[in-house]
Amino acid sequence: MFQSIKHIKYLGYNATTKLYEYEYELVDSDFSWVAVVVAVAVAVAVAVAVAVVGAVIQEYSKRNLNVAANLVMCFKYHEKKYGLSIAQQIAWAEKHQPLFTPELKQDVQKYLTLL
Image (cartoon, rainbow, N blue to C red; front, side, top):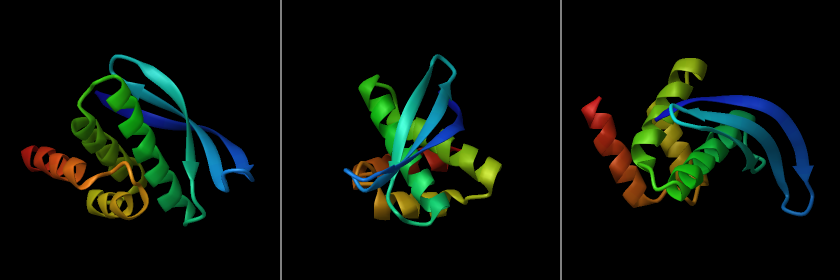
C-alpha cells in the first residue's frame, strides 16, 4: 500500500516536451521506486501534485495493484504533509491529469466513503 513520496531533485525544463521534470521516490509497503514526474507550467504545487497522481496511476496499474486505494493513500499523505485537501487534489487531477478518468474518480470516491 502507498506510504509516502519524497522529492529527490528537480531535473529541469525539457524543451522537447515543454514540461518540467522532477525525480521522486515513491514508497509502498512492499516496494519502492524512483519516478520521473512531469508537470506543465501550472502553479508548482498543483503541477507536482498532478504529476505525482499520474506516476501513482501508472506504477500501480503496471503492477496490477489497486490504483484507487493507493491514490486515496497518496491523497491522504499530501493532505497530512502539505495541507492539500483531498477534494482539491481530486479537482486538480480531474482538470490536469488525463490518466485520472471518471471511472477512477468513482472508485476513489468509493474508497473515501469507507474511511
